[in-house]
Image (cartoon, rainbow, N blue to C red; front, side):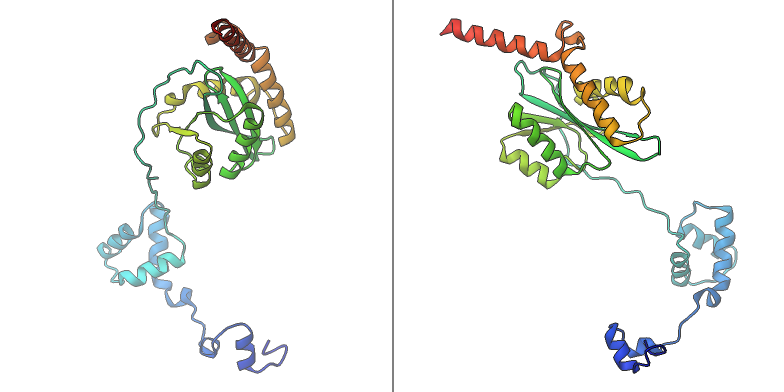
Length: 273
């Protein structure tokens, strides 16, 4: 602005919110100024790529380089040698979840995520929803990203034709511990049964569903688009619920089992009346 538009320095600095002191301050070439420190660090990192800052500092002192630790750390950061620190996700303690099988439909839903990739290498996720008592798949949502609000929308769509469950069993994923998801469950009187971290067997019903989906669809086909995944998983869900015999349901499909259970329940109610 000063050289091309011939503006005064004061007006140019005011236009870009820059102080005149910063404008007149000479630029420091830290690479030339700290060339000796850069050389020492490069020599260490070439031999020990996974060493952190303090290990590099201790080694420089042992090698006789009297470099102040603050200067060494400044150059270390400017060279972007910082190693990411692995932090442990803190979760509240969870109680063990017993796998009691509900005897009525729509009592307890199980939720879980799966992941896979297209032919192009693009990753996508699948959100599976299962009625534990009936072993019936209620929904398979496919997209590259499924945040907590998207999970709520999927459950609302299922509840529109199925009704709200009494409880939901899920892991401690960020979508399921999000405030929006917890609030939605509380507003509809849905209890959340979190499994213990690292214990997928406490959500065994949907893990078994995931295995079938993996063997029959994800490992069997090569998909180029998400629409192809949605179409095939939709057909899989229909076949799983209406045609595929289920061993734990005496060899009948989940939807047939649910219809028989509801018919038997209504007949018992009429007899008792």
